[in-house]
Length: 81
Image 1 (tube, rainbow, N blue to C red):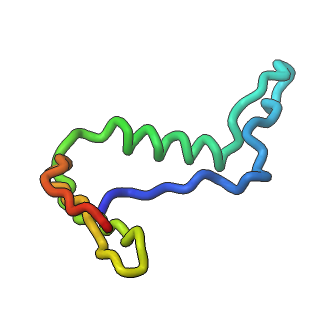
Image 2 (cartoon, one colour; image 1 turned 180 degrees about the vertical axis):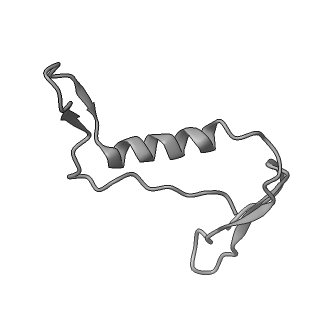
């Protein structure tokens, strides 16, 4: 299954003042880690990921759908109803 990352909590500081005389603002560790993880996913080579993603039905009497990925490429779609 594909990697899933969640950003840090809403109330987590994004930047902090650097610990030297420069007064430069830098990313906090938690946000730096999140951006690094995001970059790894975005820059990952295509292919290799094979998965089916369920799509929930749209009405109480409907049917579920799905997206099927083979080697990172969408190869199947079943529309939910």
